[in-house]
Amino acid sequence: MYRLATYKLRPKPDFIIPGAMKSGTTSMFYYLSRYEKVRPPFRKEIHFFDHNYDEGESWYRSNFPISANVKNGLITGESSPYYLFYPRAPKRIKRVTPEAKIIVLLRDPAERAISHYWHNVRVGTENLNILDAFKEESERISGEEEKIKEDGSYYGYNHVKFSYLERGKYHYQLDRYFRKFERSDVMILKSSSFFESTIESMKKVCNFLGLKYKNREVYRKTNEGEYLKGTPKEVKYWLKTYFEEPNRKLSDKYGVSFE
Image 1 (cartoon, helix red, strand yellow):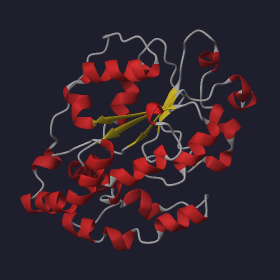
Image 2 (image 1 turned 60 degrees about the vertical axis):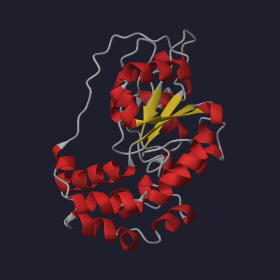
Image 3 (image 1 turned 45 degrees about the horizontal axis):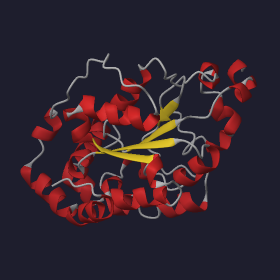
């Protein structure tokens, strides 16, 4: 109640990490949160611009610390990885936080889809085998985006859970952001570059956010998980073929290549 009552004293976020899911957003948020000039919100995934928008701006701002509103170079931000895929998010973000910087992490869409699938298996929301899950996706999520666009309060369970392939079509998701934000206000990073060259990536992110880079973090390089090593070759080939056209569009429009 206290946080809500003092929402006017609390800032809007200076940066938002909208996704993509399973692409390193948690690591990026964690690394930034450890900077002395960054004051993180009370929870990482606020989900205001997707599931909680009806709570209102006062509720949203109540999630951020008052200290970040002091004019002493402190900033705050959030990371909710459904924002990239959720069709209403860019417009909502621009309306509420027009000055926010956007940091997008993109993972190889085939790897991302596999990781997403095994995440669902682990939490018990997926019963199909991996290839069937991918092949049945279009039927599972059919009409979901249209319902979301028509009704801002609609929660598309299948759109959230079973969008293994559609989330990897990054070009049109980025299109939605660039219709609302200037190119200079959006940073796009490949997850592979972020984890393989974390120091250089964090220097770029700090420069983008106006922070002074300090190498105080022990960056742990992630390696290929067992779920990826154990995925059948025919599934990987199927995904590679499936994403050829979306990847080409991404490369042509935004210069991001996964070849």
